[in-house]
Image (cartoon, rainbow, N blue to C red):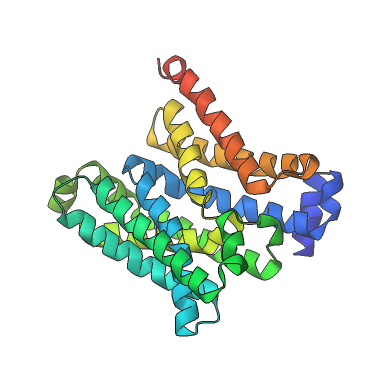
Length: 280
């Protein structure tokens, strides 16, 4: 880790790099923003923005259920609940005849209400209220290691499964004709989203995590001309927003998560204005 610190200090010779917590936050951003950008591209393509938002809202319920069951590791309880929540939501969504956004909203509302009620009843809401906005400056080296393994997991998934996932998202009938088990692909993808959201939610925040998934991908989609540029631009936008947001938040004394989202939002509107010019 000391070698990584030295490299970062050389690349970014700023005052804040003397602090270990800022170095840890920067490494975390370098790892998590590409993950969110990559996953976000397919979330945007599949019109799953509400889905990922509902997963974020389920975090409090995962914490509350973990407390009831005596699970000391809150990350584990959140991940386990999120996986069950994602699979159940995906199952119900595929069974209904009316709009998917309706059932997703139902699940999201119930999840956050149940979590808030259980935590308030047990007197522990204030203890976990920080999960609403997150604090990436609190991340430590052990947690960075989790993010590194998550980064590798997402890269491997994308390398081996992207073509199947892409065909499934474009035309599920065509995917089935090519022997692709669309239900398995879809379920694996939502489980991966659930895991990544829950791993990151302590540092990004329940209220902001969906924005970091959606905004870079949506911005890239405004100007990208093909799938390769779509992914590449999304990663660049996400990294830029993350690093710039961290730097500005340090000097302006603004929470890092909201600052990153604000920069991502500015980029979105800039690309929205540019999309006709770029694609002509």
